[in-house]
Each structure stands twice: as structure tokens, then as C-alpha cells.
Length: 327
Ligand code: NAD
Image (cartoon, rainbow, N blue to C red):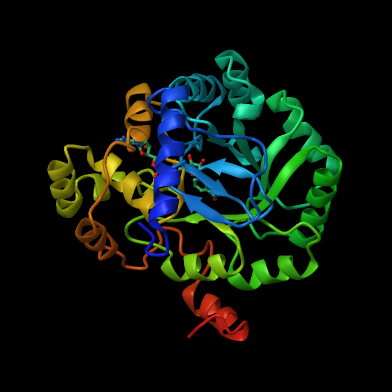
């Protein structure tokens, strides 16, 4: 737990969490669509991140990369039935229709769900955003990300800002941008990005990125939290992870997801298996000790599987120094 947390805050958080669980079932997120605070903060007890624009988003969701429409539909349905309220898709995944169908069929209210999709930034027009809404069969997108810093991403971001003004999108974010590119967006933005989605797992823990983003009031959401296909076995069969899993009476995947959450990262493991989907959200009945967290933190090799994408420490450090964000 954060050392700055007072006992009173802890009790308040615990009571709120207990009320949320009692009201909404064992694994449901006590998610509220209404804005309550403009102070960005990761709230593990209430299972929400308070974004800098005042919105709250669930800290654990379903990733849908590689899921074709029909599989995406059944996976989203399964996720929503198991209490997930955050779904991550992208124009590039070609499955927004299936994701939208899963949401419709679940019967869960649209205002209870936090839907993220992403735009490929080359030649973005308002019609591209409208097309996302048509495929999803939704009136609005909760969080729209620019998938990559490609093409004229500044102009793409301006179009996304206009979509927010028109009520089609509630919040904006970036994916795979470096610190320098984030600064470029912050410089021009009238509606600042609330979140960065980047490769984050035990071997590439993004510690410096997290520090930089905190200073810029931007949430960190990790993609490929289990290492991504085909790398998940590296982590799921890792001796340290397995030992901790045994000690906690949980699975390796649950230990890794819990590590992401206790580290303050929003986590979106991908799966089409109903069993894995259920398993991956069953991470709120245990916690990792400080020693276990340290052991997992020690697995960081600053080694991305996709080194050409996302922040680089040298660049991040230079940006932080220019902003006097380092000691
Ligand atoms: P991941 O780390 O979530 O791993 C997915 C793999 O883990 C799948 O093969 C799945 O079958 C397996 N798995 C899931 N739960 C398991 C469990 N409990 N036990 C054993 N195996 C399990 O990788 P990912 O799907 O690449 O990343 C998560 C999400 O992040 C994606 O689905 C997508 O939404 C997003 N993403 C974004 C970007 C980006 O550029 N912004 C890139 C990649 C992924």
C-alpha cells in the first residue's frame, strides 16, 4: 500500500470496496461513469483509476487483440458476465463489430462499461471515428487512443479532440508514443491525453515511463501484461512466479496480473478462453507481500519484445531532465 495513504483513507477505501462488492457481486467493478475527482490516482481498493479529466476507469479489463469478430463477441460476453467492465479493442484488430455485439448481448448497461478503441493515425478523418461508432453500435467511445505515432499524428489528435467536443468520445489517449512525442502532443493539445498504453510485463516493467507519466498526470496501461503471444510461457513457467503462485494458492497468471495492479498499472490481459477470462479477474482476494513484489520487480530486464515501439529510457530521461522531473 502507498505509504502516503492515511489510516482513515484506508478505512474509507475498504468500506467503499466492501459496499461495492456487496452490491455488485464478488468480482464486479464498483465502476461509476460519473466524474468524481480531477486528481489522477490508482485506487486498488475501489478497482478504478481516477483519470486526470475526472473520469474513472476500471483497472482491469479484457484485451481483444487477434480475436476475430465472433470470438471477440463471445469473449466480451464472457468477460462482462464475469464482472469485467473495461474492454480494449482497436480499428486495427478488425473486431469492433464483434465487441459491440458482445456488449449488446450482455445486457449490461452501456454506462457501466468503459470501452477503449484505437485509431491508426494515418489520414484520420471524422468519418473514421464515426465508422468506429457504427461498427460498435454505440453512441460514444469512452477512450480513444492513437495506436501508433505514425503519419501526421498531430493532425489526427486534433480530429480526435473535435470528436470529444462533439460528444462522440469521452477521453483521449496515446499508445506506443515516446516521451518526446507525448510532449509534442501536450504542447498542442487543448484536451490532454489521459493515458498511455505501452508494452509492459515482468521483463519490461516501464519503471521510468511510469515515473514520467505520473509527473504528466497520465495513466499507464500495459499491453501484453502476460508477455503476449507467443511469450506467455516464459512468464507462466518462471520459477519465481510459480513459487509465489504456490505460496499464494493462486495461478501464475493471477500473480502476474496482481503484480501489475499492485504496481499501479492498468492491466488488460487478452483471452478467448472462458476459463482464463474468469481466472484473470479473480485477483482481488489476495495480495502480494512487499517481499514478493520485490522479487517480481527484480525480474525487470528493460527488455521489450517490440523494441521499436514505445518509450525509450534515454529519451524519457532527457525529457524528464528538461522538465526538472528528476532529483
Ligand atoms: P497478453 O499478455 O494479454 O497475453 C495473451 C495470451 O495469454 C493469449 O495467448 C492468451 O491465451 C494467454 N492467456 C490469457 N490468460 C491466460 C491465463 N490465465 N493462463 C494462461 N494463458 C493465458 O497479450 P496481448 O493479448 O497481446 O495483450 C493484451 C491486450 O493489450 C491485447 O489483447 C490488446 O487489447 C492490447 N494490445 C495493445 C497493443 C498496442 O499496440 N496498443 C499491442 C498489443 C496488445
